[in-house]
Amino acid sequence: MPGEAAPARTPERQAFYDRIAPLNLAPLWERLHSLVTPEPVTQCQPHIWHYADVRPHLLQSGGLITAMEATRRVLMLENPGYPGEATITGSLFAGLQLIMPGEVAPAHRHTQSALRFIIEGRGAYTSVDGERTTMQPGDFVITPSWTWHDHGNETSEPMVWLDGLDIQIVRLLGASFAEPGANNVQAVARSEGDSFARYGQNLLPVDWKPAVKTSPVFNYPYARSREALVAMDRGGPPEAYHGHKLRYVNPASGQSAMPTIGTFIQLLPAGFASQPYRATDGTVFVCVEGGGETRVGDTVMQWLPRDIFVVPGWAQHTHHASRESVLFSFSDRPVQEALGLWREARGNV
Ligand code: GTQ
Image (cartoon, rainbow, N blue to C red; front, side):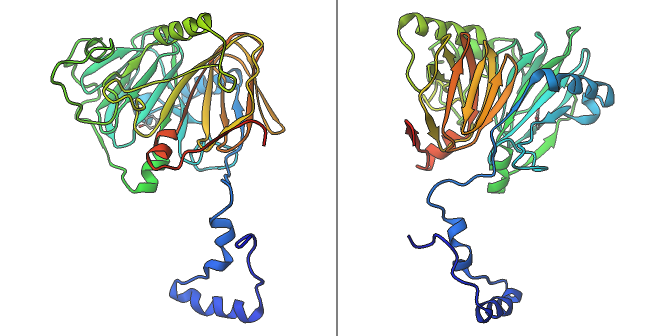
């Protein structure tokens, strides 16, 4: 096949490359095989962060710096294949954010979209463009692009959530803008639950037209998602590759709840083993309930509640649930689908 390996680098060719380098020119034929690969090639490695290992360090960070000074007190989950690059897959950022009792993470806005998946603690709030939502474990909360947001914890317990952001996508596209708010805590403009009432009940305000691509529902409570999964499990057998898997949607469009990040939740019945599967979107998973393992090649990642793990794009994998388990996940699938690039393969390679 053409392009499988670079042509020989003769002294005459090397001399030519050296002559053109000062002109900012380089020969494609030296690089073509590594740029246009027959299949996806990624630095992303499968990896798991066990919450029991991470938690003591996260809490220590609470004594090291305030949320106010840090702006966001987050320990980034850096993929070992991308050391120092603040990324968990090639395209997405993930981190664990801690808000201590009485703290505020000051208001700001940026073009990056963020998701929060609540890991520990209950009752802290995040504010999005003047509306607060109180967060419970397992809730999926959205901060849409360019919306003002501050977080606060008025409870007596530390609050921890997983942040997922499209930082690398926005950077690639050269579209990063950010600004601090005028006040640390933004004024409350609507009562809590307003968005959920208007947009989260299979109803929409008559004559309403969405102005943005992100879902107007900004908290998808775990209680609701879980209820749906349990009903599906009662209703019939799990699908062979995913168990009972649902995607979070924007009710205004039927598209993903966030334009750049796809979010999913799945129930794996006790004893369930998924069939081998791969897709081009590298995916971050959180174990919400249960316990089991995910196998990616020779790597076995054993997960318990609050553990976070990553499966690289195009890596064949299987999930094995030793107990009834719930996994939340997110990936760049909507971006790939919008561009006609997303692919999956079912069954053994
Ligand atoms: O909460 O606004 O993990 O701006 C990274 C960047 C969280 C946030 C992160 C952010 C935020």
